[in-house]
Image (spheres, rainbow, N blue to C red):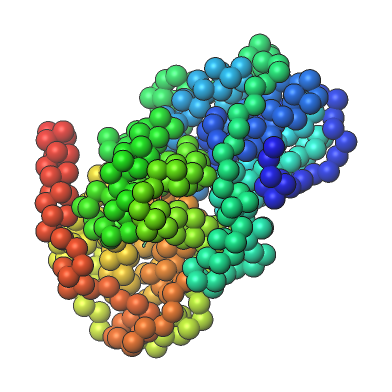
Length: 460
Ligand SMILES: Cc1cc2nc3c(=O)[nH]c(=O)nc-3n(C[C@H](O)[C@H](O)[C@H](O)COP(=O)(O)OP(=O)(O)OC[C@H]3O[C@@H](n4cnc5c(N)ncnc54)[C@H](O)[C@@H]3O)c2cc1C
């Protein structure tokens, strides 16, 4: 039974006289722990119809590059195989997701979709709901607590959303049972045109930005995500509260790319952590990041239409940054110097190098990294744009609700005023001295130097 709070109708129509149900998979790219898929199967079983899963592969996805696509296709290949084992056909076609979904609905009795929060994701769903002839139902599956249950407006920060999430969490923190489809869709005459068995040639067929290449540090797909989750549960969770700010502490999960592409569900991550935690503080601290911070970010993009713009930063923060816009900067770097990790700050360069080589960066370094870009740019609005652009270009988890909200945090979003300083005004600063005090930063430099050496040897 899917909780009602996760379900909403996008187009109320009589169930059409179609031959199958379509689950249009867009954000939640997995065959397990997926409320939208299970809802589609339950509706299919009730109507005696098979379910197909449709996926539209566009090479036009905002800010995506070869790094992102390769990771996503690795995940989809696994999802296709798992769906096949469940008797469900994945029909992946090249094209804009809304057009592909539309094309699959000609003989559909019902279209089910997952929920996305970014502008283009909402537009795709709206366009499909307006154009197909069958009813359209959206089922939300990439949050622990449904966004509309938490709040109908943008929250000020973690302190205001936390009690709302914690009040509702027990109602939603439950496993998603898998339902067996009563009819297989494997023999349906609906063909895809994307070969997920051959990712290299599929990548070659797409018109992509290839200047940001694949990474060896992460392999896309649910199995790799579950391996990371298991390792985190075994070695990280109980020490998370104490050591999560240490970039080489080895206690964070590294699950953000898998969460971004919906290859793993935040619900199953939270359930696994609850089940395994022996230190209550570790579980509470992890939940505060996975649920409170992550769902605060989703609340922000859901309710703030300008989520990718400096204009969405709080008034107090823009006012104080404007007042300090003429302060002398410690340094001014070009985009190229930033992009190639060629500043005079070894910590910042290491962070940027980690991001370039692995598609990932530890949270503490992300905070430091972003704060320095603000310090090194004359105009705060330009600093916002260049931070977001680098974030979304190099990180595998970039272009996420978390990207917009956390780059926003650098500029005062979801934060409060701090004692006044040069350049930052009352926006919080982070300094190299602070890094040295709080982390074993030399270990981090050594780890990144090792990564750079390996990359140079592999390229040689
Ligand atoms: C400047 C800046 C930019 C960031 N850009 C991104 C981004 O593009 N994509 C992204 O997913 N996260 C971003 N974050 C948030 C956070 O740094 C990452 O989610 C986290 O480091 C991912 O590593 P992990 O999976 O090992 O995290 P863990 O510590 O293992 O946490 C588990 C999960 O909780 C969530 N989480 C953890 N910390 C945060 C946080 N501060 N805010 C929201 N959710 C959190 C993530 O989904 C994460 O995967 C950014 C933070 C900053 C300060």
